[in-house]
Length: 268
Image (cartoon, rainbow, N blue to C red):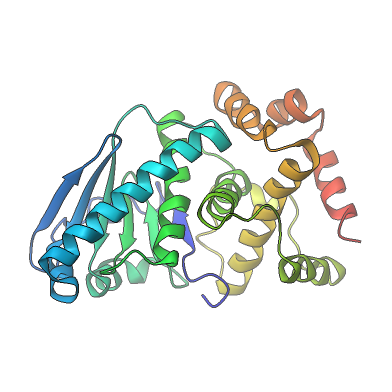
């Protein structure tokens, strides 16, 4: 997608088949490296573009980024998976071949029990963003594997963490604010109920773009209005209770309707 090429989705239910797809890289093999909290599987065909030593350096950089993101995830959202997480980095052509048909828009990664990303031979900003984004999905799945998080909380939290931890953003940009205001004025934003579906997988590119931006903005609204320190409390309460309305009430003294009204009021 033009707005965010690294949009990454959770398709645990919809793409269980994809999760079980063949684990063969372009050469039929993956190099495996481990760190404190991750097991990294890298398609060996990436060596053709990065070279053997370049590939090892790339693996080290990816694992270092993941470990840094892991610590920031605990600090910013209070999420700390208790088991090692598998991350598969595919040759870009193989990723597109195996998974491109699953999406109605271009994606650079997704989580379906395993973090799967479209690889490169160097650690780009885009790849850093995807790794941060998918880590949130993985952490929520580990924390509450039987609970289906509303997409605005799951994707909004992933978008917020990606922006905050990978890019250092502390709020919406001017263009993002302007886009939200235009969409609100034209009646094109979604209701909270519409954003509470399990995933945005059935949306077309433009609708998904709006849903992601609005979900990010909702989490950013909570962080900006009530303080970033409330987000770990909110996610902890939601994981404990499995009840969005209860978690909002206990942490923010809001019900979903009040949150929706306050969010839209700020855009007028």
